[in-house]
Length: 122
Image (cartoon, rainbow, N blue to C red):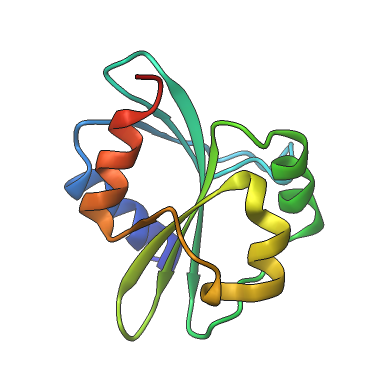
């Protein structure tokens, strides 16, 4: 099982107040990994990234998706080693690519990310 799939398993187990759909789309490059739906009826997407360093790698297609769809899109990054999970708004993808994990996250930790997703649309 790859690292992003392991992160997805953690998300499913720990953020179970959100309905998750894993998007496996080889036809449309750059499509985020997850579609989420909260109890307020709010849809959002999440790109999953796992890194061993401060740097986060994005494909040009992933960057294009988040630039074109800056609202209701997120990037969740797990830093291996410390096991830290950080959440960023998709609108900040260019900053995230430039600054890496030094960029301030909108949420830190799986529990806090779950609360962030639950609050969307309220």
